Image (tube, rainbow, N blue to C red; front, side):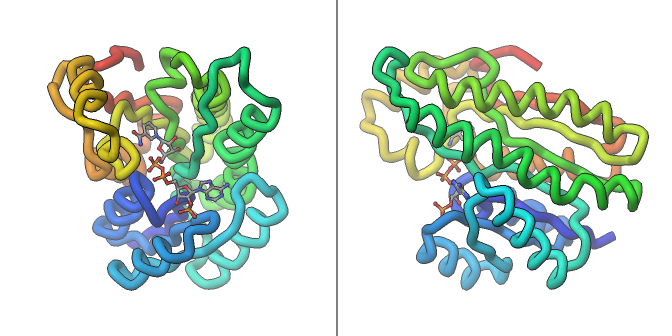
Length: 241
Ligand code: NDP
């Protein structure tokens, strides 16, 4: 059956691969983004996926944005909370602004977006919410107290909302990627990349497509018995559930 899906930050990087994995499953996909109009227009041209621009850290903007998508595509069956940013710095030097920006984009956004679609999913007795966390939310990462806290917060949110949705056919899961060969990671110099790869037992970075496939699996009709789970996709770098 064709399902409607929203992927936040769905025009670039991992989000782009998630949007395409869901499209390939036959979903009607809406990909959102924050400000990179050029990347969004290119994505739309290449794939035919509809794109929508707003700041997912803004509750009212999420409300208006989801309403616009639903009037064009119908009620949301699948929400992927993928949009995220980093503002790294050692904690003793971290500014309140660095902290607040990451909390807003990475964690407030999960409330802002899920709150728009969860009531309708409950009423229709079907829903899939997939939150893109991170290995650094599981293990903590030096220089990323803000990001690690936000990504760990997503996992707590996932486990709590899973319990609220379970009886109503709404599953809520998280995917925790390790190092993925996005533009940002691939642009690092060779020595840094070698050091990173040496820490990954499978001996390579992950691909965005591999994360897209994890999401497509959790979003499937047949994944209804999986909820509150954290799917680690990190090449064996950190063995946690
Ligand atoms: P990118 O920086 O490549 O893309 C981020 C996307 O999120 C863009 O589409 C961006 O929009 C959008 N976005 C950012 N902030 C907002 C906002 N406030 N409102 C709306 N949209 C926003 O990220 P990645 O593909 O690298 O990462 C995707 C997710 O995966 C993130 O949550 C990240 O934390 C997580 N992750 C990434 C890993 C990696 O190795 N890359 C590892 C583990 C987790 P725009 O294009 O307009 O800027």
